[in-house]
Length: 125
Image (cartoon, rainbow, N blue to C red; front, top):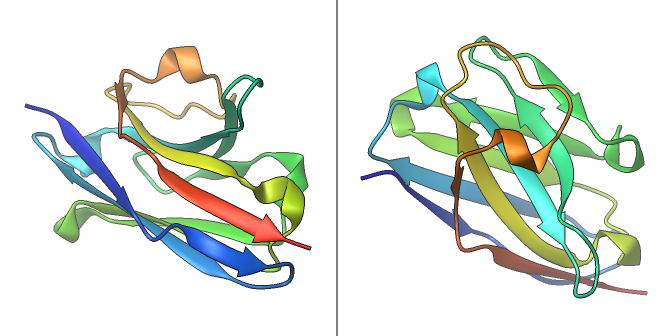
């Protein structure tokens, strides 16, 4: 059974940092595309960053230079290091996985089959 569990959310002031983790089970991250999405009430879920099987990464423009996505296949874990957080980064952050064996740079939520329950990130000004 595929499971994704997110950790690491919290409340910080603008300029602060958080590191999100996603612990997975039931599949091998080495063979999946992984991603982080975020959502605020009333808005659609948007892609933040994605990583392919071979480590290719892409980021939405608003987080480039501030967020870093990485994974540890041996630990079945996905990470999102978030620096210089801003109030517009506030939202529920979701880990997602797709069995696609290539790379999904489009950050399209419809391309991801499996989702975690989310972890809340709140950034105050």
